[in-house]
Image (cartoon, rainbow, N blue to C red; front, top):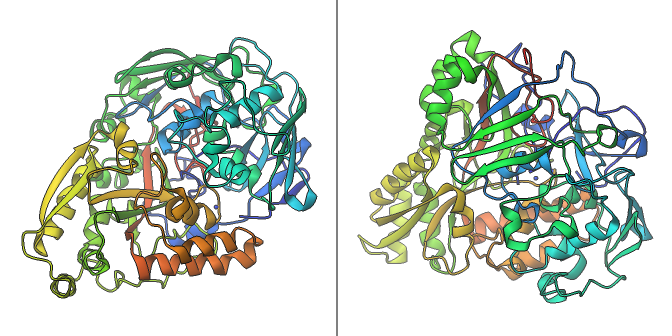
Length: 598
């Protein structure tokens, strides 16, 4: 999950690899020409264009001006709960990723043009990075004039600290690409206390030869490093400001806004960061004076307020929530309201994930896969505006997407095959009334999914025990290895346009730990070997290996049932300017917003 922008047509290099947890989406509706149409898989395929790597000229600020933008005013943000995290090292889900781009900065970031094309540019670095040693070594030089909100200069020591603190045990919820590339799957053993007791990674791995230079050394080529470092999870945490666990509630800003007030479970106020220099930033703007988050408004009431478009709602946006499904037709069929929407095809695949430590019989897992009424799940999430029935675990936003792949016959029987499911359960010797524990998030979507899933499982003879989990703690709870649940819904999307960012974090058996994204606890030797092989190949050659791993995961192991590919429709108030869909974040482009009448 990451950021967005307007692209400068200067010298750029095509990235060696091309796909993110909350990245990608569809190029935008500006609101002016929003139509009564849903996004298609053809729209999604347009999002899988290769990302390009920008040079120093492309990384210079300020960001290109948004036509008609005016300074001033406050944007109201409607959200149904707090951010999952505000510490960059803990950020790996969509809401916090959106938030991160307002206050945090990393070595690199994504610049996005009006067509949704992405360029990786230097954020606090002067460019997207320089590779040498056959792609095993990457060097970044820091820009002049980068400070935190207190005016403290950011140096290479802060970048080293940012990477090394990710090894500490209190960081458990963020991405682990860079750490594992540097130190292997058991990366925490390389620096178990992080940098907090004076120890560091060896210079042969990560070095800072001077205050402006950072050098990463890997044991194999890592062409995707600039894209990985653009993730919110790798944004800078100044060494002097790091308060360890407490940092999650009061992080220091490097971006255009900083936290002025935070009331847990109620509200969050951002104001201008006067120590942010637009001349150093090729991506972000600082048009409005601030953002007022109200974190107690569910999507039903968000939608009602934004449809009415009265008072403060005129200056309001949906942040990472979307139009309430029961009000979708009211939004789509009213031209004036529909003109205030952004629509996009997201990179997420919703899947019913099995805890393989508890759900050991593949026939039982296959039975549940056949029973799942995918069409009903899509309908509950907005119908054709909310998603499409999924055949596999790779989204249509990934390069080389195979739309015919459908091992569970969902495209032919989207409402499920109860008879096939019962037949498999009979073969497995499962008795009527066998208990299953299903955990779900207490969101409107999660509650609707729970009803459908409980009903489907009851039809094939299970006694379903449901467990509601608070939205803000959902992924942290199911991310515990010893969780007490049999099944849970998860949504995953590529971290950048590459199959590697789906298969590796979610299905690599070497990455099973509390807080990791391997929610099923799959640990298959062949899948692990395919991941190892594919990670050493150039993207084109690797694609076949990633697809082979995908087929084995879905057909021979089945750790998670593909349910549906996700789309989004979001509303904004009539006084919001610059609203468009972001390919990179898969939500409203948070960087280009302004108020038409401040």
